[in-house]
Amino acid sequence: MTPPDGWELVEGPRIRREFRFPDFVTAFGFMASCALVAERMDHHPNWSNAYGTVTVELWSHDVAAVTERDMLLAEAMNRLATGVGE
Image 1: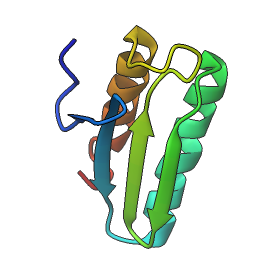
Image 2 (image 1 turned 30 degrees about the horizontal axis):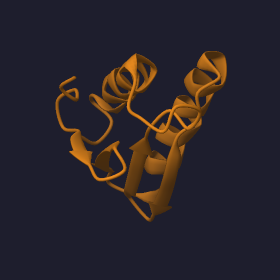
Image 3 (image 1 turned 90 degrees about the vertical axis):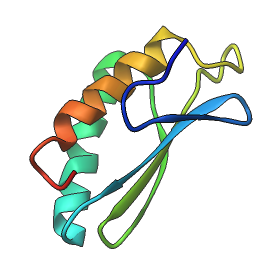
Image 4 (image 1 turned 180 degrees about the vertical axis):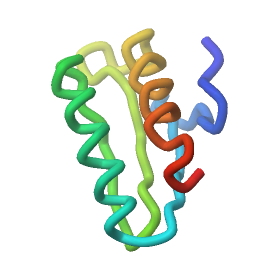
């Protein structure tokens, strides 16, 4: 399974991406938008925010692997980031 654009497969296995935005408010708005999608999917990211940077790791905890659900959430996050700061 190949991660979506901008994402990398890392040890765990997990997929990871760092999103950069012009400021904290924009980064936080991105996270709020992603949270709504993640909640609808019942699939929640591991993430952190430092000013304009949001670092995300996705994997399916129940199977300790990267699954199609992770790929779908990553693609949704990519769409939400388009035009905002990426």
